[in-house]
Length: 61
Image (cartoon, rainbow, N blue to C red; front, side):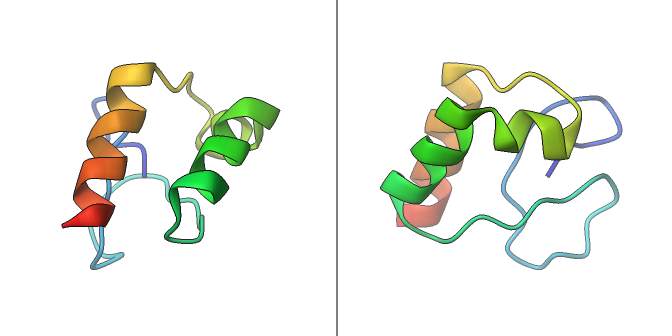
């Protein structure tokens, strides 16, 4: 999801304010969404490597 502050974050509750995007819970699916630009288009914000790693870490917990 993109927070109102413009940051990319993982929201497992799907209730946080901001713009959301559905991506399956595997690293390869998430990386493919970033590589193809689909995640950035959906969230309407650039996705940086640090944000991607934070989301991957949250999904793996």
